Image: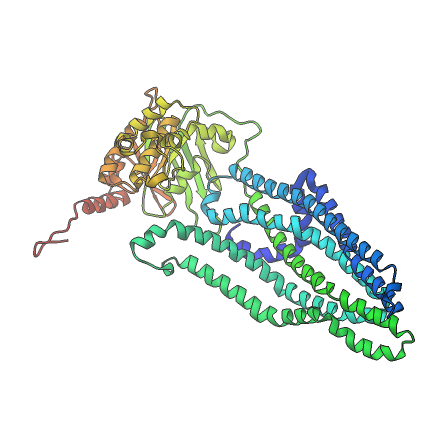
Length: 616
């Protein structure tokens, strides 16, 4: 689902499923789910025991007032004090035990959420990552798990305790004097009404948009950090990264609007009511006192309610944070479930084995989600086994999309992509990956040694095989300048490489993998003239396997000089294959390719001259 679609449907979906958020979360906890229930029970008992000291204080005050001023006659006061201490210690011990249980369950739940999402993403088509930014995925995988951890470890047992506290509070309100109890209920009712106003309706919509805004800031923030070198080079400000700037501004407006416009008045009223709960007792006491026959007993009750009213702010604050935590958890688990719902590449029940390494596009159509026009529209061409076919054409013509369909980064909407006469969807994904090596223009090295970076293509390769692949990829000059040669850790101690050098290392990976089919997408995109010459030399090694047999090569290129020697050139324009043939044949045809070649020749002969009257 796209970001826009998710933003529109998330509030409705979350409202309909919020009630089951805790159950969906606990499903990740596995066998430790029972610890959550046990922790909640212990927390509830702990809260009920927490009322004990207040009751003991009331008993002690009653006895002291009854014998005043002969305080020594109140023999049970010390007993009540010890009982109060026992209740307090027991409440703390049970609460600690409850938190231990819920933390164990929460850690297992968060761990399983991360493991399941990462495992699922490992089986998701690689094209999924083109439409879902890494920052947004990191926010879901790591951030959402962290949010649910707080809910299960703290908020859920506190919720159980709050329910027990409110139930016990209501019982105690009417235990000694129902009139004073009703007075204590007034600030509770005011606070609850304010909370429902803030959290319901617009408040719930805000929480969904708030979480969406956090995801957007993570996504655009990651893009901004990666682009900092460009910002420094051109002395730009954050405004040059409009998406990141707008995401921050949107979050600021959203938070300020909700806090100031929507919550300021009800929150102030709620805090004022529960913080001054004892004030509501005074008018009731003034009205009720004249009718009392035992004024000492009434004074004792008043003292109890005045002291006990201090529990009200704690209880209502917990209820407020409980509601916020449940909304956040409902949104977090929904986002995790969206990732878990991402399409995966499953192996067919009876996978078929290709009989050769030819690649065939049969009337293939494909459109990206939300796009107005298809990226590929009834495209057909053949890459015979052992041949090299180049895809060229204007930007946006569908070249990269076509190359991505071979290793199943995406699946065609219509038509078939065949490898060795077998639809790629009918092959075992691992078998397809073994047969295809790909080098794309957006390549990154791991923070590991150059040896391990190249060996990632074939983990079982020996050091000698890796060195041979590096040499074939024209990487000897790269290794010569590194402090520890092939054992140098990329990114450590200022060790960095140019785009063209990284591209040659990617070619070394492809050579080491020794796959019979090679897909190259803009392999010379970041190459300067010197690197381009070496990359072209590496192509010659890549085009042939270790046994000398020619590989099947499908290459995408903008630099037409790299495709002159291709066995066939397919010209894609606006998603359609408009021309096919050899370089000479296409130039002679005078079509789109011929015009592109003329433009290319004019570009390579273009130069700057300082002489008067000369052309630039």
